[in-house]
Length: 260
Image (cartoon, rainbow, N blue to C red; front, top):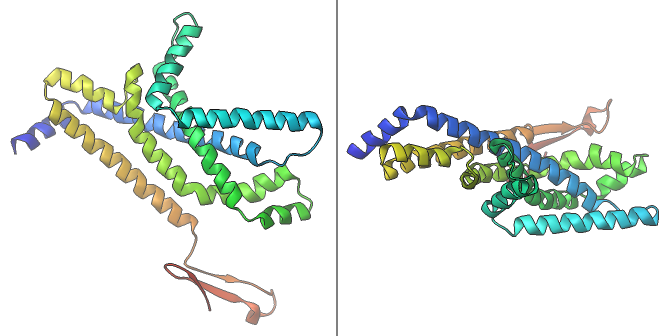
């Protein structure tokens, strides 16, 4: 009981610092995930684009593919903590000691790291879309770009939403590594608090609970969003506008779709 009382006292006494850390953590995680998704979409489109046109364009395409492949391998193959140190202090080294503002630096680091994972997620999502979708769009006169942005990518975004949600949850936790460059996220605030009260275990118990609440709440909200995107449990395909007998009613079961 004494432990729980101390935990509650820390949570209430240092609530300003804790809320500040939660705000910075969520800002960096959300912005970094969205920016990483944008990077993934751009790189995914480039990597899956067909090799066509004049030779200079084909050479440029292969060069871009090589650069993207190197970017993905480097940032997926190194820890984000190391990337944070290299990017933050590398910028300072190149600019005579002038460093990036901490929160923008954190967003850039998380975005670049997330983009490397999103690139493979999006590429897999594009490949998973049936080729007939693209062929059908091209057959009605769409260009490859139009077909990609109006037909393929909307399906890709829906299919990869669980993976994007997972990356967001991971980023909430992984922002803790940004304390190595001084970003005042939630884990950094834990160090500030325990240095004021000398209660290390109790302080980090509070931080652990806060991380769990954040990830649990975000996971449930994103699952709700996925459920909404699935649509209704039943729908009707109209085979004819005049003949109701041509309608097919489809009822979604828990695991499969049953035609009635």
